[in-house]
Structures are given as C-alpha cells and as structure tokens.
Length: 396
Ligand SMILES: *Cc1c(COP(=O)(O)O)cnc(C)c1O
Image 1 (cartoon, rainbow, N blue to C red):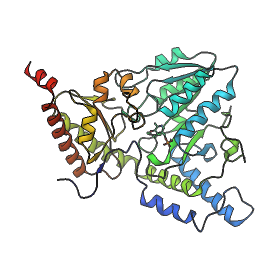
Image 2: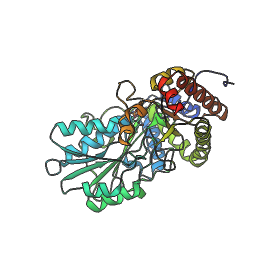
Image 3: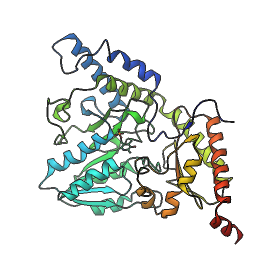
C-alpha cells in the first residue's frame, strides 16, 4: 500500500523540506525583526546582527570552526566559486596550478574549467571504482606552483566519502590550500575542519532542512590566514569577502538547521542508514543484474545509487511517477549526457543511463521504503519483460 499523501520523496540530495522548527525561528525576522544587520546604530539593526552572530556560532559549531571563520553566501555554488576563484586570483601569478577530481559537483568543476580557459593549469584526479581518490595520486599531482586543491567530501550522486584526513595531511605537508565541497557531508556525518585540516569548506542550508538561498564558506584563520579575493565588491560585509545585505531570516534558519543536525546527527544517521540498507536489500535480493554505484561502506547514510542493466533509464524514471527519485545527478539530468560521476567510476554509458539515485532523509518512513522497493522491482520486471535484449540474454 502506498502511504497516504503525495508522491514519495526520495530525492533528499537535491533538496530537503524546511524543518518546522527552522521555519518558526525564521518567521519573526521577516516582519517584526526586519533590521539590517549592518545598521548597528540602532536597536533594529543590533537585534538582526545578534541573530546573525548566533547563527554564525551554530554553523561554526557543526563543523568544528570558530564563528569568525564563517562567511555567509547565497549557497554552496557561491561558496565554491568564492573559494576557488578567490584563492586562484589571490595566489597568481606565482601559483597557477589547480587540482580537483573527476567526481566534483558542477559548482566546483565549472569554476575550475573557467580558470583553465583563462590560463590556469588544471589537474583532474581520477577515482577508483568506488569513487575514491587515491591519496598517492594527490601527492604526485602537487607541484611548487599548486595554488589550490578542491576535493568533494561526500559525493552528491553516489555518496562516497573521501579520506579527508589523509588528503588534508598531504596538502598541509606541501603547503597547498585545501578546499572541500562538503555540502552533502555537513549535517549527515561528523565534519571537523581541524581534524580534516581543510582551509576552505563549502556548505548549504537547503540540503540540511534549512531554507534555499543561503550557505556558508568556512575560511580558516590563524597563521598564516587564508586570503581570498572577493567575487563581489560593495559594502564590505562578511569581512570584505561577501558584500551585500545579509538575508537575516535565511541566515537564522540556517543556524537552527545546523543546531538540529548537530543534536540528532548520530541518531538520524543510524535510522536513515538502516532504511537505506533495507531498500538496497529489498531490491537486490529480488532483481538480477543490479549494480551498486559508490562505496559499499564509505558512503552517506541516506544514499543509494543503483544501475539496472537491460532497462532504459528514462523509461524507468517515467514509470516511477509516484516516487520522486533522480537519475544520476539532478544537475546533469536536464542534459542528455550520462553522469560524469558514473563515467568516472567506470560505468558504461548504458549502465550510467539506467541508474537511479535514492536519497533518504529526516522524514523517510519504512512504509515508504517498502512501497518504493515494490514499485522499483515491479517496474524493472515489467520493462525487462518487454525488452528483446533482456529476453535473448535470459535464454543463454
Ligand atoms: C547541492 C550541492 C551544491 C549546490 O548547492 P546550492 O546551495 O544549491 O548552490 C554544491 N555541491 C554539492 C555537492 C551539492 O550537493
């Protein structure tokens, strides 16, 4: 039986609903507490500024940073752009080499590619069949003119979690800045900027039950401090790194979302992973020729990415109209290309196209999982029964 209600939401990597507790905290800042956090000459501004500083503490606490190391942005896309272009612009002309990986989100890959077109040299590290970067490959890629390394902490398609501590140690030893896009990791697994030795870290509120339109860049302080060139010039907000009036309600919501994640992290990760394992098992034990994408253990608790051989991915997605899932990454599904992440882990074009990404989260229930598993199994059976190539294959 389908649980009462609408389409079952299993796309938590794309975005998440705002937690009611987050919304409640935000609401007063649209109306009564509408002050500009930069206008601290009066009570309105001061109260907004206090709320922003509380949020800064809440975000910092979730990632083991200090509040003054948090720069609020419009989201992880902007945070990634600020980290990558900001560091590249600051360190030229001495250091014009950038290192990244084949499994980054477009919000990292595309700024890197733009810099490459503008004269920077780019090294794209390969990954193994699970999506892991080999730390030795990183060590070999570093050069005296390397400005920055950018490596995604947890992949948004296949959930694979990199060896961040080791990566951080290598970059530190070589005196090279390390940025990580931790948008999927923050709030889902323990993240500690000191333990990971990262200089720059991006995250976003709407992936962790906060509002869309706000995120943060962690910029390490200390000796020597990380220096960035800003993308936006203006009023000098956020230590001059991000001019523009802060969206106080969004920032407040982001802070509360972080506090809730910190509070429930272990419990939620256990519960969600248990449901994910149940979904995986229910599908794998009833269907042949299904392949797991990503690392079997080192992956996000809410992630399940599967390739269904002998099935057309588009047809599969269409037939699963009552389940909101994504094929590969949401950002790549608008274009006909198969996912670059699945390609990087060695999946054939056909298998890459026939893949589904399930993203489980805070409000996913066992009932929904059982229903989704039944629907996926029945749909794959039905599509395969209509496929000539599947029938010839089963005869051999
Ligand atoms: C969602 C996501 C982004 C983009 O974040 P926005 O806040 O929507 O700009 C960047 N990187 C990863 C890994 C993501 O999952």
